[in-house]
Image (cartoon, rainbow, N blue to C red):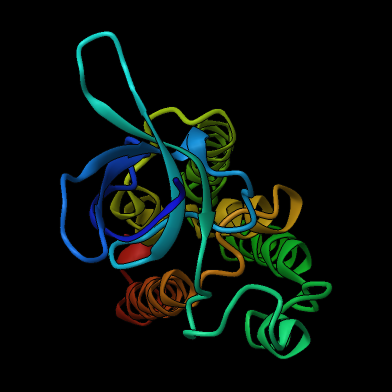
Length: 208
């Protein structure tokens, strides 16, 4: 008999949690690999339908899991076009790679022209490479259900100066470029980093 319930616990980094059936009853363990569709990641409070299997240790596991409701409360398939537009479906029109390359080339050229220390553009270049690598690692972990990189780590690298590499990773890997909450924090961090750079330039610290 197929059941319906709500995800009562969820660890997104490890890709598993528990579902509490509607109407009461024993909760079931649910793993992200049990979901039939991978169009979005599960979250706390999602309503799902599932079958139950008992393993050798007598533990109940949810299998053949499907989302019963979309995030907006509609049933899957209802108003799909509107929901896709709301999620920002379609090509990413923000020229992320171009922004990153123009900034890196610009700061390198200005540093040479103004005779800044070579570590100024060097830090941005090095941290961009490191940040891109971390994005790639997190993307791979998401695709293979491995432990994810905390978003705070990705944002911290961007704050330190790796944001051009983050932009290129978002564009080339199509990773973290659609999550609104992540993007809001990310662009705030970019602004803070640029303001700090501007203050150092105005203060003359880069020439000391």
